[in-house]
Every structure is written in C-alpha cells, then in structure tokens.
Length: 144
Image (cartoon, rainbow, N blue to C red; front, side, top):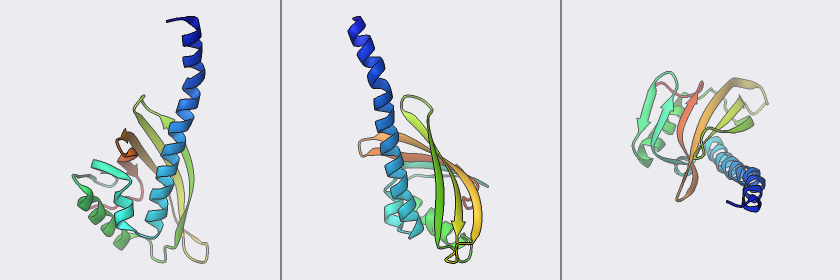
C-alpha cells in the first residue's frame, strides 16, 4: 500500500466513525421519541431480532411482535405520572461492527419532577436497514 493510500485511510477513518455515530444517535433519538409516546410499532422498528434485554431478568425477543409485547408490559409498569424523558448520550465503538450508546436519563412527570433516574447500555449493529439495536441492558427494564 502506498504512503498516500495509508495517509488517506488514516485521515478518513475518524470521519467514517463520526458518520456512523451520527447515524446511531439519530436512530436512538427516533427510538426515544417513539418510547415517549409508546408507539409500539415505531419502537420495534429500531431493533433487529433476536433482541436481548438484560435487566432484573434476561429476556430474548425472537421477533418484532415479542418486542412490541415487551414494551406493552414496560408501559404498564412505568412510573405513575410519566410524561417524558431527558437523556445524556455517549457513543463508544466496541468493535468495527458494534457500538454501545450509553444513555443516562431521567423520567419526568408533567410538572417536571423527576420520577426515575437510570442508565441504559444500548448495543447497535449495522443491518441492511441501517444501525439497529440488538441488545439493551438497563436499570429501568421490566422483570418479565
């Protein structure tokens, strides 16, 4: 490989990482928007099956319907008065094909009082449909 090709590769690598991180953040923000209004169809669209949820128990969802049902249970068990969430996101590359988005979040009621504070670790991989969640570990996941 010529020196010019090596230099171009090294220069373009951070740009590629930033583009991937931007796509992941956009996908996750779409998930958050769907979560806040409990759009189960929308929520499921941000995942690729099989999906693993690690919380008080570990669950593996084999298809889109199982993901939707999981979130229906979560909605039934979410803090009373929940109105919206605020998030602080950080994205880290785990491998060349897997990224972890850490979300430190608070859930609020309509009077802006904090109902819950938590952290979730959200693992993404690139699919034919873009970057999708395949593993979520967090303190706010339901025990099914």
